[in-house]
Each structure stands twice: as structure tokens, then as C-alpha cells.
Image (cartoon, rainbow, N blue to C red; front, top):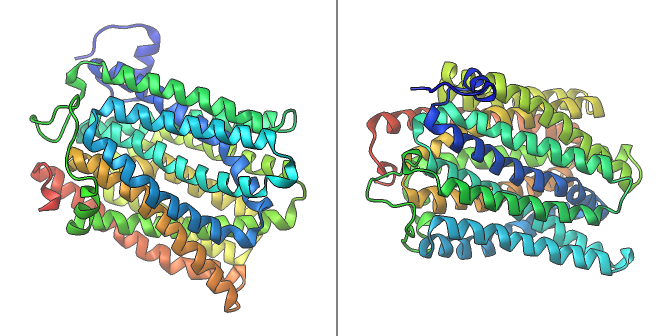
Length: 438
């Protein structure tokens, strides 16, 4: 039952199907996601420019370094999940990354520009690890906080908070990069992450009625327990989780192909670090403005109308068309159109639908298995995509040929999306907590 309230809350009720006892959790979740993505999007254009400055030919090695970084980072995080309550391990994770940013700030500030090429490469790898970890922890917290039914209603709107944060972060970088040294922008990310920690604390203090765990015996205030690498074992024993792995691998392989094609076109067309950084920031801004409109007015309706399976299949279908178009016309305009639509479609539609896949798993798998898939598997897909792209270049395929080669890969991805979405529906209806690992 909704109670009478002020004009902002009444407007919220019109936009999203939220209950009165969910409003505070919804708004704090939006704030949390705003800060996480704003912090990342301040760093993203700086990372991309540093990657190109280090040489486009070296990008596959940077992706390899990122995969190694994921291998190193997952066990300590899983150990925190096993031994500490939710609030503590989430807070420690974010503050660890804040300390890392301050270290990079000091190195980039103290060392002369001629000696920062390797710092820039390390920064590229670190931001690639940072991005997946902070977002994975956010969504793990969300699927732990909300039920399957709540997720379908609210995750799309929660995504609006993140998109607004991405808009703010990319606009902040685009506006200031020509006025101040990019290194100073890192400090803004530190402040945003501290506000994210505050949001986690506020959400953890909300009444238990907003928390939906996989079992009434599981207390969010207690450590989850279990073995450090239990999530990895669960992934390889569960057809459902392996389906999510396949979806993630195909998504990242195609995304990496497009990223490398973007790097080649940008290196050829734009000159100067400021021009390239500004181009990347403007693409981010276009993506996020389009995403906001879609999330506010369409995401919830799309998932409700089409269901999880078909919703997950929309992005692979778009990529089939996009790569075919890029193969026919490998120009900046086609690249920008495809990149903006693909990324907006992922953030606004595919990502909320994908996160609902985890609402039917146990709490341990929401943090451990999910983190393994969101980080290591994601970057493994990057690795496969990066070296596959390089190998196709070595055997003589041009950018056009590689674009056409990506079309059937996206077709396989579409079939996987349909299967895993239908499997989630079956599990949700069966209502068997943790049943996927049996």
C-alpha cells in the first residue's frame, strides 16, 4: 500500500513500480550506483588515452595483464566475503581502491611525463580491474538486498542512478581535461567512492523487510562463510552458471573486437592526447544520455513485456547488425553509432536483465561465483577477444574482415541468451534456493 507523500515521491511512483517501504532503499541504491559509475567514468577516458599512448599494438598485452590482475584480486576478495559481514567487506574493498588511486596520483604527479609510460600501462590494467570489481560488488549487494520480483521492477530504475553518475563523470572529465592536468581528476574519484561507502552503510541500516536472502537462516549481518574458492567450484558444477559464463564470454569477445576497431580508427583520425581523450569522453556522454532516457521510460516495460530471455537476446541481435554495418562502411560515423547503441543497450536493457539471473542463486554464489564471473571470466573474454583480433590481423584479415567474422559469434551469443533467460524463469518458478548447484 502506498502512502500519501510529497510531489517528488508521487512522481517517483509514476515513473517506477515502487512500494512505499522500498523508496528509501531505491533512492540510496541509486545514489550508491551514481557514485560508483561517476568515479569510474572520471577515470575511463584517462585510461583509454593512456592505452593508446602506450601503443595500440601493445593493447593485447595490457589485456593479458588485466587477466592476471583479476587472478590476483579474486582470492583476497573471496576471503573477505567468507570471513567478514557484508558491510565490512564491501567498505574495505572500496577503500582499498581509493588508496590505489592516491598512489597513482602521487606517481603521475611526481614523475616527469617521459617516465610515466609504464605507470600509464599499469594504470590501464588497474582501472580495468577496478571497474569490474566495484560494479560487481554493487550488483552483488543489490541482488542480495532485493528479491527476484523486486529486481524485475526496480533494477532498471536503479540503473538510472548509475547512468546519471556516468554522465556526470564523463561530462566532468570532458569539461575539465583541457583546463587542468588530467591527474587532478583522480581525486574526484576518491571522494565519490567515499560517498559510495556511506550509501552502503545507509542501505545496511534499513529495516530487514527490504532484505531478501536465499534462506531465512542466512543473516546479512553475519559472514557468509564457506571456502575461499567455493564460487569457482560452483560455477563449474552448475549448467546454469556455465550458461552465464558463456553469455559473458561472448559479450566480452565481441566488445573487445569493437574496442580494438575503435582504437584503430581513433588513432588514424585524431591527433594529440587531449583530442583523443575528449573524443572518448564525448562518446561516453552520448552513451549515458541515451541510456538515461531508455532506463527511465523503457527498461522496466521491456523486461515485463518481453521477459528475461528475449530481453537478453536484444543486445546480440544489435551486434549482428552493427558488425555487419561496420564491415560494409568502416567509418567514424558508423563506429560512433554502433558503439553508442551497443553500450546504451547494454547498460539500459541487457545489464538489468542479466543481473536478475543472480537473484535465484544462494548468497554465497551472489558474491563469490558472481564476482568470479564478473571479473575473471569477463577479462578472460577480453583476453580471448584481444588475441583473436591480433591473430586475425596476422593472417591478413583487415578491419572489415574482422567485423564480418564477429557476426556469427554474435549469433551464437543470441542463442545462449535465449537459453539462459528461459532457465532463469524455470528456476524462479520452482523457487528452490540454491537449486542451480545441485
